[in-house]
Length: 208
Image 1 (cartoon, one colour):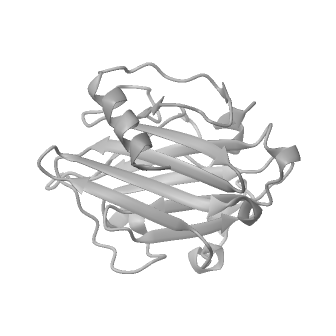
Image 2 (cartoon, rainbow, N blue to C red):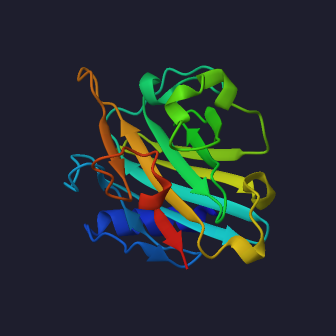
């Protein structure tokens, strides 16, 4: 997504619109509001995201309010959800059990995970799920406005996605937001996942 998409999401965020998107979405999903993933409550610091499939690429973009923008990760494939702020993008191709979990920090550090099955994902060692692949990220930090923008892009083939399997594929955009000195982050998602946490493809958005 180009700068224009970030600008569009910024305008949406500043409009104060807190409507949640439906479960089923077109391949270009438009603005998706992030809420508390367990309760649906509006977070203290809001965020909006969008996803699109364009040509042979899958793209996710988000804009976040953030009064304390940081992540201590210094290299790719660290545990970015415990080191600071992170955008997370989950994607599962229709007909497959495996899925991708991709993170980006404000400092453009990546976490790239390939999960074989959501039912057993906690039993698999972290290092066995990480990979190095053609995942591009881009961020923009607006400290005076207390905002940061993020983008994650990967080729469709990385997820085994074809034109025939776009419809019925699933995704979610999520966020860890740390504000020091509070030890616990504010955790939000574009989908309500009260009983399962993020790792539950049946609860994600379904592409029409």
